[in-house]
Length: 252
Image (tube, rainbow, N blue to C red; front, side, top):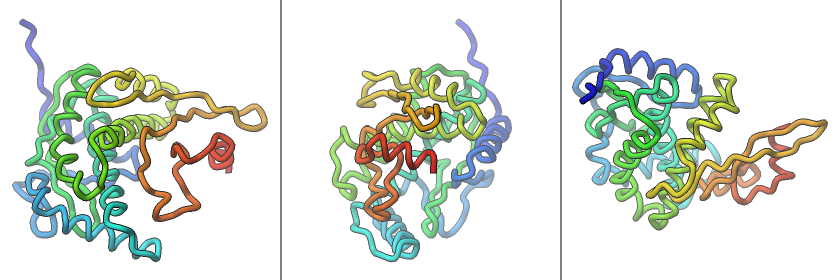
């Protein structure tokens, strides 16, 4: 039997720092103590604290966009933020090193005031695409269960969001490192389609631009509802956005 070499917590922490440094919009900090203290909700208490988290997200949206969102919109935006962030916490180190982090629910906290995450690194071990998918699915399944009454979406739509955010995180990390084409190939290997519970694949395609330019794009399996808080600015991969509008957004 081949022994599995598990990297240390500090080794994973250093890799996390590289991911966080590369991904400017990843709102995650590292923690080494027992608990972060007041104002942070442990993921293990998500079900009991979710109403408070959604209310705080709604308040942030209202402050930033000038209108109070409906509850399911605020909950969907918060869930999207969590799934994208935690997807990168799994896929980022794996993308960089080939090692899959150990990320237990008791090692994750959400700041109520901001929605930011704090994680306590727990080591990592080599894994393949199957291992990455399994780890993400295991981690997010109870999160989806907790959010479902708030977001008013069925299981397929929720797992579609997980798929989109896992792909998006890998793609984003690759773009930030100047290796978008490689990242797209990695994302397609992770999610080639027909890998339950993920209902679809990365499915990148080439979009013809102007003056001989071209752009990688894909269409999300579901909507993150950003258009519901900022109607003119739907995401460039939104199912509601046609190719002509995508080109205009990408080349603006």
